[in-house]
Image (tube, rainbow, N blue to C red; front, side):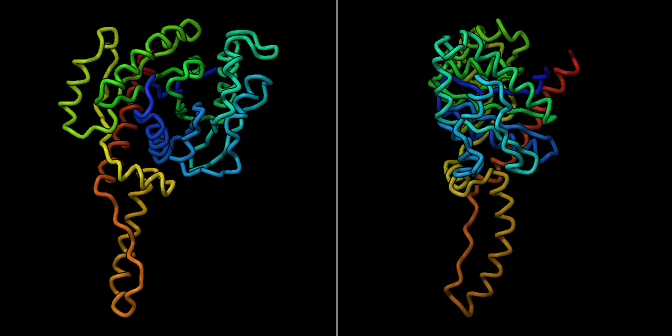
Length: 304
């Protein structure tokens, strides 16, 4: 099976941007014509918030993942949630897998959950002919993180500029070492700075200075995602990716001119909302990051 384009976004610490990166990178890949699968392996199921899929009829809270592993049924893939993007939902039902990882499930031997997931995802990729697969993993849930890593080629680690996210990388390291026993193809794609506010150069150096020696070989990607709480809130409130928020604002600009004319005779005409100033910069960051990720993967494929 071909898992060469599977990227797991992982960190042992929550709140570092895994879900936002997963959703917005998927949007950028699809925008460039790459058929993309996004997988939610987080029990919180928050990927649906960033994709604007709350209440979607295809959301099974992770039941399809469980059934695929336990019963061998095809994964529940929700098609075309965006042009070029398919979605495997996650959520609370993924917790059903936890006792099975220790061999406590009915007829499920220890260690078979990871292999079951590997087989299920491999079949889905082959049938869907995906160019990219992005997997959002749960923080603090080592069993599901381990499962995700058994079926990934690449690990992308979001980091904030605070020591807590660096500690999350220390937690992730042993899981990667363990996963490589069954998945010898697993590789670090790199670390990406998320939500930085000061200059990227200074933050990059601070991160590199503070990482333990055993992680110094993990590359720190050149692209960093700038911080904007207002943009993040707007996106989740409207169920839009950052790029979609920017594109909608371009349409809204003409609406403002219409409102300007209309309010001369009717002051009650509503005024379109303004785009947060940081949104365009964030959209550019995500586009640059997607291009850098694509370049790194292609470079590795060419070298192999």
